[in-house]
Image (cartoon, rainbow, N blue to C red):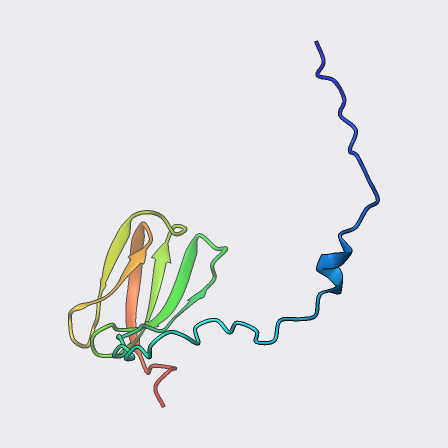
Length: 115
């Protein structure tokens, strides 16, 4: 059994009152009525750049989260749900938690983001 076809109805009438009204005298500006909120202090961030993403063995250049040492790591496997901790060669803390099956190498380099 097929449902009946429903044809759209077009009346051709327009509501001229809504179109012909003059614009509002004072447009509402969003966030104008809000009180000034204090800015939050900056949080540490981490630079990173992935290379060779389409290969079985990829590389990533990043900065250590703690000491901003530049690091290049080779990893095996595409990004997965498994987090692998990468230790910084400089401060020996966890520099990054990388989503990869296995980290093959970690080498300290000058950070490309430090001025």
